[in-house]
Length: 238
Length: 238
DNA sequence: CGAAACTTTGAGACCCTTCAATTACCGTGG
DNA sequence: CCACGGTAATTGAAGGGTCTCAAAGTTTCG
Image 1 (tube, each protein chain N blue to C red):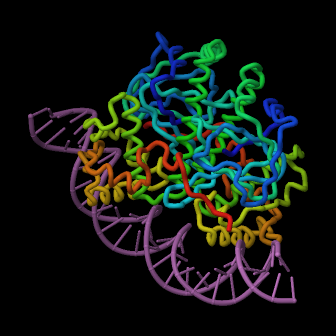
Image 2 (cartoon, chains in turn orange, blue, purple, red):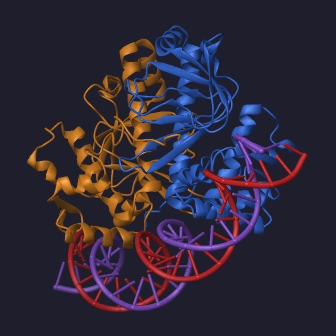
Image 3 (tube, helix red, strand yellow):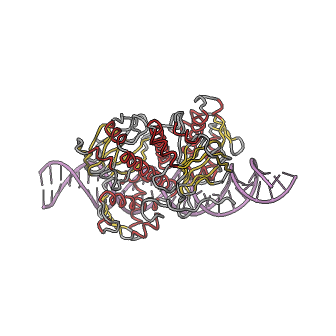
């Protein structure tokens, strides 16, 4: 599941000195249907969470950055797949260890629950994008989303210059399956954002943000996080 | 947030003898942006959870049935709106009461967390529908979703005859905003399902399922719940 | 350096949307 | 109980955005 990682995810200390795994792009960390006995924490790199339909269609649910947790599930089996999109290192622990940690420390439990809610809000944002936004808008949101996640993961100030250059280790197909589009549409939409002077492509896996205000305007959000969360219009009953 | 209600949501006992509110269709229970100091439980009727964009676009996130909980949020403000779509009765409690209940009873806490994960899985299903399915498929899923939720809410056996007749108290626009479509498309897709002998419309707010196998085939799921959760194909790395 | 894979761009088709008109539903009042 | 008016739902026709199919260009990596 997608997942933010603000400072205080203290429960992540269960991964201190945990065994680590090295993943190459394309390597799977968990397959849907597998037993969910282990939980994970991203040490470095980038991973992708997705859900498959029986006919092979795929919805990417989010991307995972360093200090993001993997292992949310209601049942004892994962119903989503997690795989690396960039070379990555992942720490793993038995789920029971986490469960004990949470049970014995209310602050950790609290931090965990709060993380779960952040994941849920990310899913709500994704649903809003998929259901309501156009292709160009979705891509603008995506760029801001990546920037936001890089910022959380690096703890760099929000206006830092280096956040204007973004790495895109995933393929166009991955982006397409995240945004509910086809890869050709993703390419075309990138071209349009570039023509509008909002971004500049640097090769095919890096871009530079030229007009963040324009992107925010197009996306309809100030930051990626919390669009329309503070106040909003709603259907008036005459 | 959408929400299933299997038997053991024992934490709902905090709503015993709680004050109740009566809502008419269109009445809001919570507005996005409002303080989240209260939590709620649906006693009867049907409500709808939605998220608004600043330009007025709306994504409906789910529908709420009796014994569904309202009040999930990471922050102290709600970022979604909940309103009645049918005449409803809702019980309310101060959030602190629930917090104490959960803190003092591990079983209740466990049940609560499990409910949160179910909500999350519903959001994942929604994202999959919005991103990957066609209009007709989405509507087929919607019909099965309603049936599934009615079943959970009534505790009637899965093959019960009465689950073949469904009430649709919400408007076509509500359905459209749930499925990421326009109301005309919803109408047309209903017509197509009817022409395909899968459903029969009875007035505009009731329908009868004629071919549940066909709907499941079209939706790509056996039941509404857990499509592709058990096992799934996934991208092979050549 | 060269081949394979990925990305971009183009042209045409299709599905959903938009705009518009008709029909059905439903609450109100006679 | 029926007539009426307003709102919601359905259906039709035309348009637009995204998808499909195809080819050219670029990147990556052995």
